[in-house]
Length: 105
Image 1 (cartoon, rainbow, N blue to C red):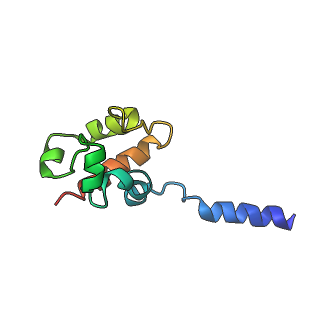
Image 2: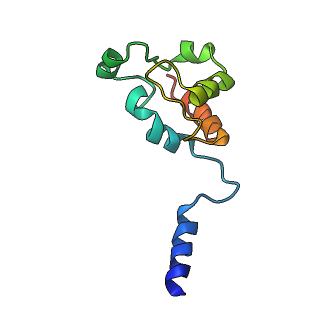
Image 3: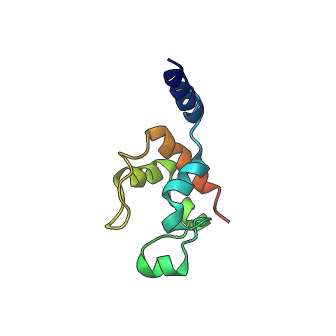
C-alpha cells in the first residue's frame, strides 16, 4: 500500500495544479527555442538551414493575431514546422502565443 501512495504523491506533485495557467515560457523552451532561438531570433546557422524561418520582431507581430499564431501551431507551416495539435493543448498554444509576443525587442 505504501509504494502505491508514494507513487500517487509523486504524480500529484509533478502534475500542474488544476486551474493553473500553462507556462508559456516553459512551452517555448521545450518546443520552439531550438529553431526560433532564445529570443525569437534564429541563429545564422538555423536561418541558413531554414531560410523561411521568421524573426519575431515588431513587424512580425504587427501582421499576426494570436489566433493566426495558434493556427500555425495547430497545423504547422511548410515542410519544416510540424503541427503541434497532438503535442499541445489549446490553452497551451494560447499561452505560447502570448509568451512569444514578450520576446519582441
